[in-house]
Each structure stands twice: as C-alpha cells, then as structure tokens.
Image 1 (cartoon, rainbow over the protein chains, first blue to last red):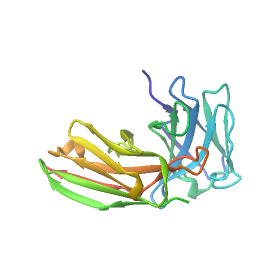
Image 2: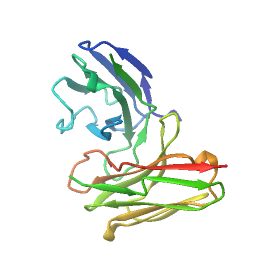
Image 3: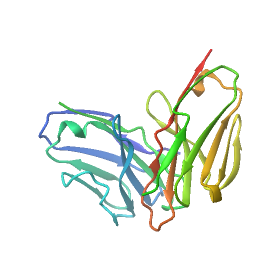
Length: 114
Length: 111
C-alpha cells in the first residue's frame, strides 16, 4: 500500500514568511510524528499526535511552530515568521498505534529560508 | 532524556566485506529501530528490534535490552549498502514521545 507522503518536497521561502508543510500518513495509522533533520542538530523529534490530539508540544523549537491534525489523518506543520535557522528537512512518520510499533517515514520536505 | 551513541561514526569497506555497527542507549526502551538513510534522504526501515535477534537477508540485528545495546550486522556488503545507518529509540518512561536518534554511522562500500 501507499507509504507516508509529504508535500511539498522542496520549499524555498524568504525570511519572515509563513510556511505550511503537509503530511499524509499511512492509511489506518493513528499515530503521527514530526521530526526535522539539520546538519547541526541531527534528527530531532518535534511533536506526536495520537488521533487528533498532541499530548506534548514541548519538542517544538519555538512558539512560531504549530501543528494540527484533523480527521485523524492529514497533519500540517506551520512555521510562522520563518528564520534562517528553520532551514532543514522536515520529516513525518506514522505508526499503527504509538509505542511498541515501527514508525515509517515519509520522504521529507526540504525547507530553505533565504 | 535518553542518550543514544553509535559507533563507529564512519566506516569504509570493500565490497564483499562484513561489518558490525553498534548502538548504545542510556535507559530502558520500548522501541528500537534501525534505519538506512539512502543518498536521497529517505529513511528506510531495517528492523524494529527492542529486544532479541532478527534477520533479513544479508542484514541481521541483535538487541540486548538488559545491557542497553544493539548491533546491526551487514554481511557481504554491496555498494548499494552505502549511506548512513541510524539507530533510534523511544524510552519506556511513559507516553509516546517520539524517537531519539543517534548521530549515525556513515558507511561507504567501495567497489
């Protein structure tokens, strides 16, 4: 079946603009995760959804970052007033029900902030 | 939070060689996965292995949870095995907090 999909695959934006990144999890997966990968920080966890709720948002780097999930499926990660340090690859993963299950990753969105 | 250390950081081998990659973690886990990140950046699942031993073709993995380490074995390496191998864990402290990744082992297989 289809894997995790993300859009856009690449996004170039100017400093100060808002961006929205989208993730479509594997059908039937109730858990959804956002990560980012940058040269300086490696792979870091941002936020987790079980269904539509995110019990812990403390992994988000700043209050410019927000995420939502509707209908237990698609999720969007929004970055407001982008800064150059936000440049990274943003990865989405899903799993069938959270802990004790494999996470499957999408291809990522490469964000470049000029 | 939980710490994950991978070794070696870099490994260069000739095609056909065998290799062992190690992952040490600092606390008990309820998820441990090995990934291969290909040159296009895609993270490919290799193993979900919080404990025990698994094999898939030329790859196998062993996790000794009580001693807090995992090993990934690659036998008869091929050039397509090149890339970065990541170990990632989720600690068992409650809730699903996402995976903590090691810094990876960068493997280069030369023809």
